[in-house]
Length: 147
Image (cartoon, rainbow, N blue to C red):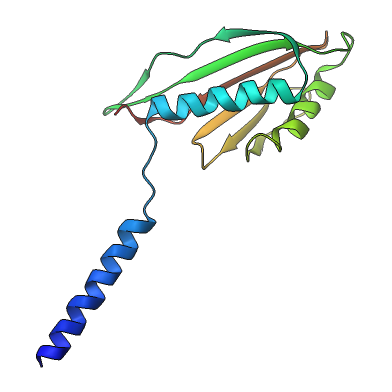
């Protein structure tokens, strides 16, 4: 009988270790915000955008309630071809994004902003390029813990 009890305790210990080892820690809003910045600036570099300007530095928590917040970040940049269309620029960014981080298109109604999300990074991007050859991208994190 003691051997069965010992085996039961060992099985429970192994299961608890497996469960605790598999659970991923959710990033904070600040951590995901830094990841968002890296993804967007990396995307601008891969797209070879010129004259990149930060339009939203996203350095502040936006409260979501219950000790949670989100962060934002946005940039613009000019294409090397000033007459590039919005769809072409957004398509270029989608192609370049695959080398930066794993995002999936969540919304693409055509001739409108394209929305993408990364479950692992807990971030979302919105591609809003314009017809005058201007890259435009903004992003936000999910509502995440503040600490």
